[in-house]
Amino acid sequence: MKTTAVRLYGKNDLRMETFELPEIKETEILAKVVCDSLCMSSYKAAVQGADHKRVHDDVAEKPIIIGHELCGELVKVGAKWADKYHAGDKFVIQPALNYKGSLDAPGYSYQYVGGDATYIILPEEVMLMNCLLDYNDDSWFCGSLTEPLSCVIGAFHANYHTKRGSYEHTMGIKEGGRMAILAGVGPMGLAAIDYIIHCNRKPATLIVTDIDSARLDRAAEILPVEEAAKNGIDLKYVNTRDIENSEDYLKELAGGDFDDVFVFAPVASVIESGDKLLGQDGCLNFFAGPTNPQFSAPFNFYNVHYASTHIVGTSGGNTDDMIESIEMIKEGLLTPSILVTHIGGLDCVKDTTLNLPHIPGGKKLIYTGISMPLTAIADFEELGKNDPFFAELARLVSETKGLWNAKAEKYLLENSKTIE
Image (cartoon, rainbow, N blue to C red; front, top):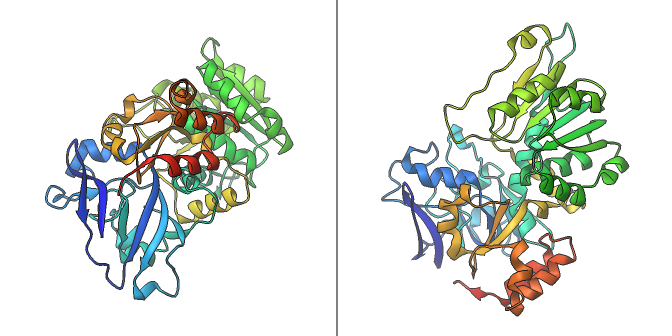
């Protein structure tokens, strides 16, 4: 079977190509990809090439398909898996396989499996590691977003606390405590707010900061303080741009020091601010992944010693986190669409990936079976003045406060130019 895919050959060398897939083995599964959301991790792999830890040295001879936040449908199941999986099943993949201790992962290390392709072959290790997950939902795009959502969920599970005189770590945020999410109204920050409002372990107080009033207003519209209050959380959005001694202000606003602080921007001053907010046994979670391997920031080690403050960080979620995201989506507890700001087809992946740090907004959602330039959802209305296709998309997203939705997805898939 032929597939069309975006493949990495080396540093900054991405190519969209059509080629023949080999026949699957009895240990493999043939699958169709419907959508993939682009990730900064793919950008890092693209610019680093074989220097990336997950990309093999022979990538020039054996190019890999990029993309790891995919959702699709199983087409043909090898005999080994016929009792567990079936053609027609919707699926998502947890890319962090950790197979035999290897860093190999779909989207970084494999010739025939990655998110930016029309058809792929799932190797045996994906199934052996229970990383092929059932996904049953009306939309496809929510499936693509289960992987980034799992990263958020994993971060909240990674925090820990202790009791005086005990070395036992209690995992997770402090229930009923004070939490701050700094630089927190970007797409992943919104996902974090959404999760913490609706999960089963909540703080009593949540302060979300940023220095962009428009983004804060948008966050308050999508995730209003009233919704948080219904779930037992006192939520406040704060613009700290012009506040002197913002740490003191935030502590006064919250009624004391913070138990959990999440930093959503790789900025030294934001980390320092988070450090100053921590109370006794406070945990700072550095969520934002820096691109500079030498990135560092001061941390108060007097408080580490005498106040038991500590810091954690995670890079991605695990399979349990991904399953949790799937279940919460199924129950209607999460709104994955808050992550998405742009829509495009497979033919825009190369340029979008290589320029990802310079394209504002949140997740760039790719439908691999169609041809479409990368387009901001916010531009649909203007484009619709001259194009009925975008006019209808604008109408459909207006029904959900400008957020991407299943109706818009269905219309897009039925009315776009296809890529075989």
